[in-house]
Image (cartoon, rainbow, N blue to C red; front, side, top):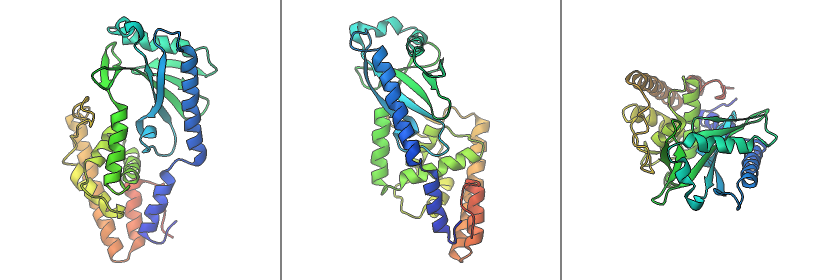
Length: 290
């Protein structure tokens, strides 16, 4: 509960952060996955493990509660050109890793699409994205249909760090809040697309998250197309159908209109009304007035 709108926003930002125990769990499960892989693909293997790192929202520090899945990139050495064995069958590459991990004490190990998932009794589960490093830059990741695509989580993480610094360390808290908005309003936007959309919506970003949210909703609804900063995936909004795009724009316009009214209420001192409107935008986890 909060008596002012700024206090409600500060409380909300803290609520979205992982607890120390959750951070430790994330770190521990990455380390466990690394250990499993290192034991299975050591120096004597024809594709020894080079390194692992947290990727996705956990790797970019934009993950929010409740904690669900985490992504770990596992880089394998292309020893003796082993990649050529899997060039036209990345499914076989995935299943090799899955079968190797089946020896360990996880509940289920399964290959799904582009990753191998380690299931645990409680969240977070771990999605291992196995890759080879391209000589030309980026990484070769199974594309889910037997072929390969190029990705570059290292560049994505560096870009997020740079943009967050350029925007006074206010970008990541804004992203986390907007992820909650997305989650409570039909989850129409993919996580990475939303992150890059927020990162590209501001030339400056101060500490007034209320006005910034209004600006974002007004700008982003007309600028849904943003490119992969690593230059590999093109337009990150390409998964949206025409209908889905219209639905996102309608949802953003509704949020912009409520944010405008909430900011006007705050200016006239009616924090109860402002908080009521922000709770519609961000959901029931947003603090109540009082």
